[in-house]
Image (cartoon, one colour):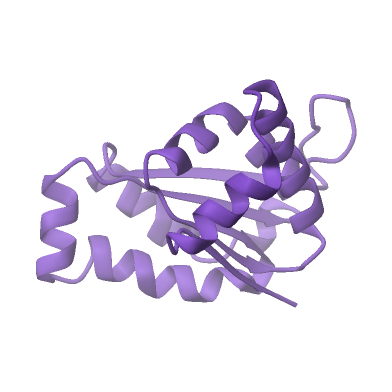
Length: 151
């Protein structure tokens, strides 16, 4: 799950259904090997929405929940510039690509400006693996693994 700012809203309910409420799906998920991985990009730590909730879930379900923040006014990317969400996601490009190839779903919600950097990063991973990005993205979309709601 990749979010910028208020794009976090749908993920809050999703994570609650998985880890807070007692639901058959959530129970099966946390007893299995499922992983919900949240990337949230905001300007600074004062703007972190629902951090107390994320930390509680992380504490209770460390094997099933991962959390990464991109704080553009507080963190630096590998090139020394501002840390944007696409930079944080890129730090895990190979792992994300492998998870997608193994059936993971990727959700995007927030500012559309994050998308070019993320798709370019995944395209780079494709090229390194000798694959065509267009074919891989089509495959993921056809399998229902690629979910984008940006504004």
